[in-house]
Length: 456
Image (cartoon, rainbow, N blue to C red; front, side, top):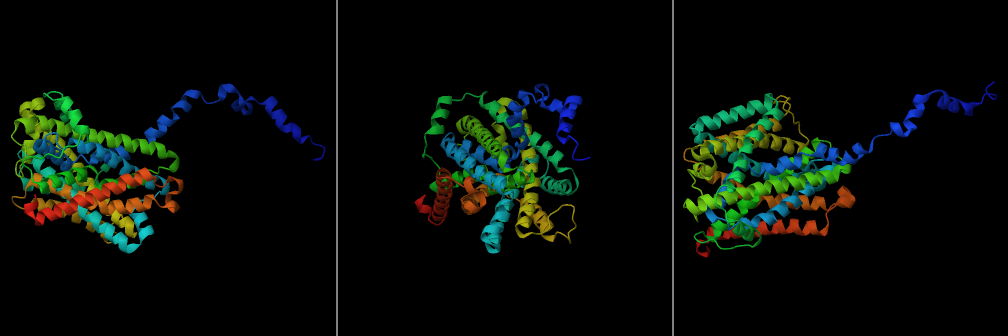
């Protein structure tokens, strides 16, 4: 009978007669403490990537030309700007990383939900203009790199645009991106060169922490434009959009927030360190011994001049070494920028966004992608378009448009409904608002000096 069965003895018999069910309770079968201690390391490695890759994406063609121009033109005179740039880069990158980690949504998606369609359209136009300018800088880099290798500009630009279109739409983009990233490692040669040339490291340490406003031989307007370009190439609108989208696509959750933050901080510091070494190398080669003081890189031969800074390391092969690195960095950004722009804008309006779809299924996506490629390549096909002038000028444009995107980011990062306890603190707000305000003031000054040359 059921009532007479000793039901309470069944589990006792199983534990007594069968060892396997009891084994998990024994100390010998418990997980070893070593893996538990290493768990944070593995979780950090699991989320590692977006912050490091995106921060270093700023060291693309426009970045290389801008940093080289600053070092050749001012020596160490603008080195002081990199400490506030590093702080601002970390703060801005951390805000968008936090938004992506906590909400699981891209930046444009949040803008649409928070501000509505009209402001989303306005933000999309800013993104398209900023990223279109940056794409143009990448094709300028392709033209400059292949020009050093003897390839005519039309062949270089058209060939690169065709290859990028085929690779993005048909090939394995991850493998291609890794190849381009590997080519970009050639810019580590600037760090090596800095230790081969006579560098006054005491002067470097001093100018890194003590601001200098002296710019003999350079007008106030040109100085402000170079400062805006320095900020614009270090903290580009594209970087913020791509970082948040990458974090969302990776499926990172709020529990991994501290690892994401570590990724962002380490990536930002590394990228700024590389930029500093480029300025140091060009300052103690081109500025001191190349006759570039107060002049900077030439619009027509800027690539050759920037490459000559590597002569102490590579000798007669300096141009080839520079060309390899510049080509890899330019192709990587030229491939990713149009694609990510198309994805982000289509996401904002809920449009179809897939490289596997046909044009009739995703007309906005393919129009944006092909349009950005065509504009970037088409402008560089115009005769006598200055390569380095275009590369540096587009970074000024990025710096001018950055405050517009920053306003959206700051408001979203302070939204209690979105982030709750993860919303911005006062320190973050002060730094972010200060960055947007300073760039706005510098832009206004640049406009005024353009119309009033006598004030220079």
